[in-house]
Every structure is written in C-alpha cells, then in structure tokens.
Image (tube, rainbow, N blue to C red; front, side, top):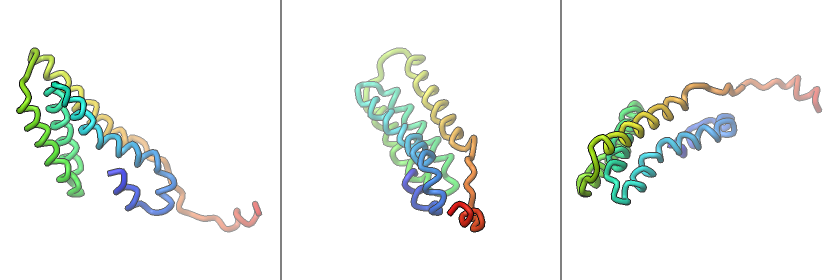
Length: 130
C-alpha cells in the first residue's frame, strides 16, 4: 500500500507525504507481524491477524486493492485452526479485540489530519529572493 501511494502520487505529493506512505505501510504490515508472533504457539494472535487483515481488506475494498488482503487473512485463520488452542477463551479473545481495535484506529488515524500541499507557484516571489 505504501508503494502504491508513492507511485500513484504527483511529484509534489511524493516529497511531502513520505511519512504518510511509511505509516500506511506499517498499518498494512501489522497483520503479518501479528501472524509472525502467532507462530510461537499462540493461535489467538493468528486469529487476530486474520481478523485485522479482513477488516483492512473490507475498508480498502473501494479501490479493489483490498482483495489482496483476503487470501492472507483466510490463511491466518486456517493456520490458527491447525494449532491446538490452549488457555481460557477470555485470554484468547482479548488479543483479537485489541488487535482489531488498534488496527482500525490506526488506519482511520491516517486520515485524521491532512497536511496541505501548495500546488501554486509564485514566480514573482522567486525572482525577489534571487
């Protein structure tokens, strides 16, 4: 997602929104990072990764890019099903809810404030400073 935002942006936006593109990449990499942590016999983290991946797929479905996130989300659920579950159900549900909440809030926080980018050029001002 970060690469797509960088490639599809106008040249002025590329220079101004480097941090925003990195933030998008981090938000969309979060399910994979949760899944990596879940490989250490923690199926609840794999369920959390799958749920967050499907939420992000649903949110980005407008541009059809979200379809890319459906397959990994389903695979995270399958991998969680292959592991034997241990612990109480409340301990298993908590990481799922926390991951969904934090991931969704992080995604929408990307749109909370837009930094303005000035598209106008003022040739008079440039000649005075020279």
